[in-house]
Image (cartoon, rainbow, N blue to C red; front, side, top):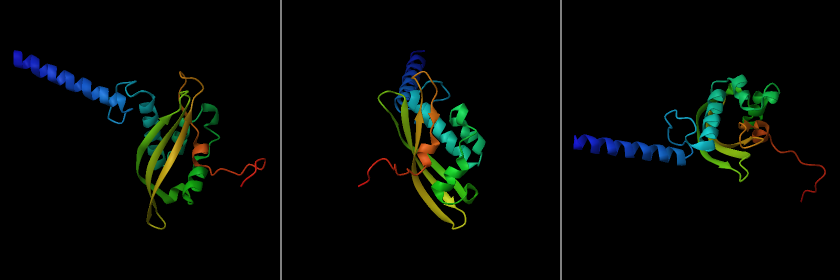
Length: 165
């Protein structure tokens, strides 16, 4: 009986230690489906990985759902990916993706997720490794996170009202 209690105690401490590490890591370790474990970092990690999975399987309508509802019909993911890779999305095979880091600003209203994406350009049979930052925002700490894909993938345009050196 004593060995059984000691064994159960060791298992309990190990389980709590693992869940604590999963929470502190921001969901980098599997959270066993426990909601809220890992905080906002885990939520952003799940959204980013799910987004890249949608892109990998060419489900652009589902990939648009990470934007605000009012913008979902307007965001042109196919165009943005074409600009990013220089070829239409049909010519790209996303082979692997991972989260490099997640950064949330001090207000808790803006975040960025740096992703490393490995893609095969089918026509040239060339593998490309790119690091891409996805930007997220929300109106208040209680609101859901929304992606700003256009800010993430568009090349910045020169502001004609500002001087460039």
